[in-house]
Image 1 (spheres, rainbow, N blue to C red):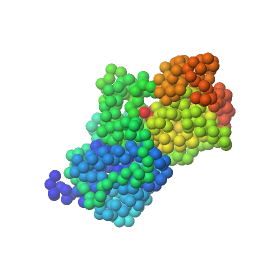
Image 2: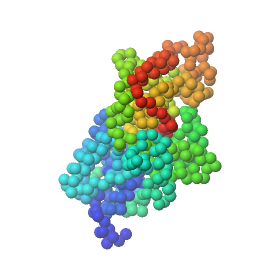
Image 3: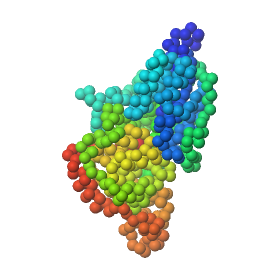
Image 4: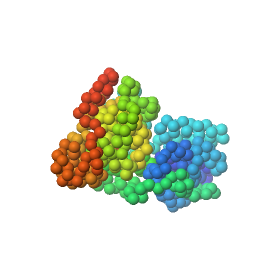
Length: 504
């Protein structure tokens, strides 16, 4: 590119602020920063406003930290570098923009209420110094008002939303919603600032190592692409395998979608391509529908931010949940995987040990907490928010409200998962349960779904002592079901679901 052409660009210097978009390919804000600027600096902020609320051991921070190291290395290969700071983003971004004497800051949209407020404050601070803030859509295919009903209103039921979502896509190079945003061809405009690029250690950020290194989770852009390539080899079987936690059925891309180490547009294109060439397109179409669920929950959060505090359907806030010491003890049993229901307990062991939970089990455990134990869904939502390495506010909130019947297009309140039949159906041979509850490993395939129904001789033979090395059930499901129906009697409106969300 000639000097004359560069001089025509609107900005001499710009700052690209990485957030939930940690990649140097198909990245909207980075693309636009490079197309409009002679020199682009890059930064990531470990936002102390967020970090101060996290536990000392947090696998998300370790995934993020490792992914940022890779991001910096990739930027260096392209001629740039990554500035990393640990500070309040609301203060650090305006200060850094002034320090680097940039004309503009480029970001991708963040749809969470606190992030929206933070970005508005930053925009105001930048404006005081005549620095522009440009924000772009990057982490969804369609956002707030881009998929509306024929009446011009946002959807609250998934299937009509999905149909409208699919109708709006062309899935070719001309489609603005899924086209790629090239970066590498413009990389000569990446700049290295005189500011130190030292990556803070976990300890300097206030965190201690967990077992993250032992989990061998693929990290960063290369890890995300590795998972994409692996999943595309088995996407045709996704519909048949996705509900069975002992089978390699999901894509395992949820954490990469959360941190933007993969491109949602790229995934949507790959799913559509897979559907076109497959003899049976049901697998690819089912997975594409899960990407639509993700957009759907982002849209709900944007139009109805009150869901962060309470039910999407306000009538459901009238439900009286169990409280007091007895409820706290039940909640603790659920958190620690000591409910006496093997599939529930194995699922809770999975999230506690790995930071991940299979999506079918997210529904099973959520329903058990809400409709067997009678505990407020918000307590479970908060627990998942702390433990899940792929935690995403919109999807987590949407999933818990779906399970509690209080959300949009949620399961009807009288639909109550039976944890025994769920176990028998989705972990028939007990492979998943045995992996996380080795004390039950010697029970037969038909025995381990409800060990309290066995004779003492059968339990002794398997080395299981109820109440000692495995708990008795904390509730009787049939009794709890009746109590739940009574509890939900205050609800006058019944939502009917047409589909089940799957975050995997």
